[in-house]
Length: 252
Image (tube, rainbow, N blue to C red; front, side, top):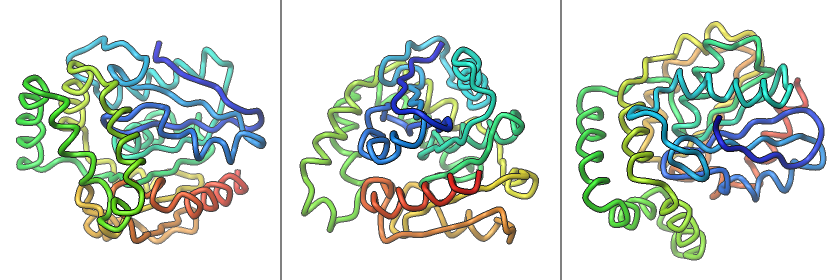
C-alpha cells in the first residue's frame, strides 16, 4: 500500500503530489485546513516513503492504490486535490471511481494527454534521471517558479530541491513512463456530476493552461482560476489557493 499521513479531523480531504515531490509539499496548506478536515497525504511510488513496485506508475493503477488507502482507512467518499502528476491521478479517480469523490481539484495540471514530442522528452528524461537525478533536480526546480518569486524566496527553492532529492531513480523513471502513457481525460469535465475546481498559473511552462482551458465546458459545477504564477501556484499564491479550497469544500 502507498505510504500516507493523516493530519487533522473532519471531512476527508486527499492530497496528491506532483512529479519529484512528496506529501511534505502540502504541509503549509494542510496547516490551514486540519482544524476542519481529515487531511490524507499520499506518497506515490518512489516518492517520499512509498516503495517502487512497477517500472511504470500507470495513472489508473495509482488511482486504484489511492482507493486502497481510502478503503483501509474506512473512508467512503473524499475530496481530492492533485498537483501536476497528482492531477492526472485525480482525473483517473474522477473517471473510474466517481462515486468515491465528493469533488476534485486540479492545480497546475491538465486533462490532455502527451503529444509525441512530449512523450519523447519524457523518454529522454528517463535516461537523464539514470545518469544524474541530482543534476536534473538542480536545473529543473527553479524553472517551476516565476523570476520574481525566486528572487524573494530562495529558501523555498532550496526546500523543494531537498524534497525532490528524496525521490528514487526508479520512482522518477516509473512516473515519467506513466505520465507519457496517460490518456486524454477531458471528457471527465463534461461527465463528472459534482464540484470541480481548476487552478492554473499564467506563467506555467510545464502545462499549457490556455490549450487545456479552451476545451473545458461551461458548467455551474466547474470553476477555473488563473494566477500570476508558474507551475507551483499552491506555493506562489498559497493564501488564494487555500481560500479556493475552503470554497469548494463548503460545497460538499
